[in-house]
Length: 389
Image: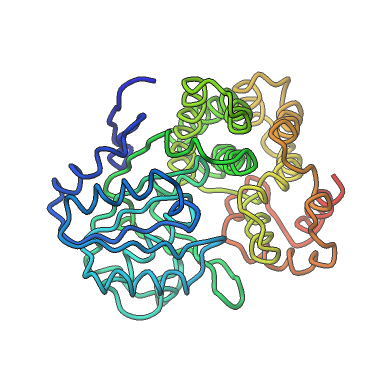
């Protein structure tokens, strides 16, 4: 692997094997003194996590660790993290983990110095409170290659009772620094490597297909797609092989980490119907977001194909598939190759959830950017196709 490199787009990113070791210097340069480390239960148990916390302790005057994140993030996790942060009077947050931990960390960063309830700051709410108080210095260390939350301006958090997902968005939530270290993703098991990788793929493809003009996002999306095509299968295969060559494994993980970053940058252009369906599956059935995207993506892409065939030709050319229909077939082949189920039925999603799935997907804010207009009947048909695929 090459040395650590730095680039800004738009966040300051330091990328490469061992990038996490720059954390103490980064905290020192920022002049922060009291740090809250936010992570999830699984990451907190990994052997490299405690040494990372010790690096923080070597720099800061006071350090607290909040590891109360698991599953799809909910408000109660944010509230508990805010309590931990206020107890240490945190002026900085180090977020370590996958999309859930990073989203919770951003929501904690918002609420440490802002009044009211988290959902008072929901994106698009007519009477939303302003984000006008200081946000702690935020450093993100991703441990998965999927959501790209480390370069995003938003946090997706669910209501504990209804499981409805809310988007909290503001440019001030963008982490100030990302330490993107492929070594931190080596321990991700095959099924999570596959699901998070398909999440990155969905971001890239839906961003490219989204309505509107954004040539920079389009270019980033296509290059990210090329990286997924090159590296995802290898990353999953190496994850399941204890004898895998370390350098080859790191190269695959680095390629996917770049693709994940690029997907989150590209989807500032918008997403689409796949994400609306996936959000419904996570809300109603508590499915992992990346897995939900993988289950819905082929049906949703077939739905879009006739509307923007030229766009599908460009996607197909990027992955070496024979035309637009061939690109959809490529997605299905990739999904199977990385070991994910072929249908909602195979995943165990109950058919009697259909009405609720349609209701939640229709209310979701992603499908208005889809290249083809989506109504309730369309969503029903898409879910039915995904049930029986």
